[in-house]
Image (cartoon, rainbow, N blue to C red; front, side, top):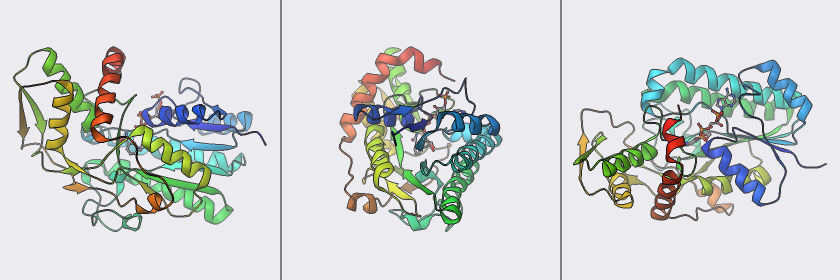
Length: 312
Ligand SMILES: NC(=O)c1ccc[n+]([C@@H]2O[C@H](COP(=O)([O-])OP(=O)(O)OC[C@H]3O[C@@H](n4cnc5c(N)ncnc54)[C@H](OP(=O)(O)O)[C@@H]3O)[C@@H](O)[C@H]2O)c1
């Protein structure tokens, strides 16, 4: 049968990187814009699946955001994510699609999970309160894949990425994650000759960042080879403090003012790094260094700055 891989969420950071990689391998990717198919509409999703007959699905569509977005729009985060993933996974099963890769996130592990976080830590403790609605939805998505595997033998798997960055990231300060938010803040401080940039929290939390093109290689590998009940971690394997992140971005951007840490703002989880030994043992490893990844992302940001700053 001819391959027809539906990358859901192909315009997002993750979906676009996966689409680029599949296309560079000469593989047949099908996509549909949100303006044509809103994944929250169950009937329309099922109709589209029957009509377009994908042979597999990489599910990179989600409502994604940082601390402000999560705490301002908890209803949207839980409703959109539960709805779109249930529609796509159930619709895939009904349409006879036997292969699906779902994406979780390291931020859905328990707040105080033992570090580095193993796959088995999921659901072993309280969640990070600032994103618990998103986390509950994503955990449900992983378990939905497991349920369809258990009941129907579907080869649905889940990949758990750490924090990602790279081309097509969201640089809107209201909704973005820490890496693009800092990049935009430092860039704007440089061009306005501001004396300082304020960074939320103490700067002490440790975070793991992976370039999205490395993640795409992991996801495509899992699409082709991984077929187990348990989700699989896909992380960089090293972490940096928020202070180190800010200093690296300031250096790459060329900002020479002060970096001020606003300790009245929350730090979130103290440390978050995943144990990615399982996927490494299977042959995947990251190829893009932290400095190179930040430098190339900043070049991308400069080339796309108007479009990204307007993005809602
Ligand atoms: N970004 C990270 O650091 C990170 C880390 C770990 C895991 N992940 C996971 O990776 C996946 C993708 O994240 P991302 O960063 O690529 O997010 P993103 O850039 O915001 O992309 C999300 C995509 O989902 C689409 N989408 C959302 N709601 C939709 C709807 N109702 N109907 C149709 N399409 C819809 C968006 O369409 P439009 O473009 O039309 O809005 C967009 O293409 C998520 O599952 C996320 O949990 C991301």
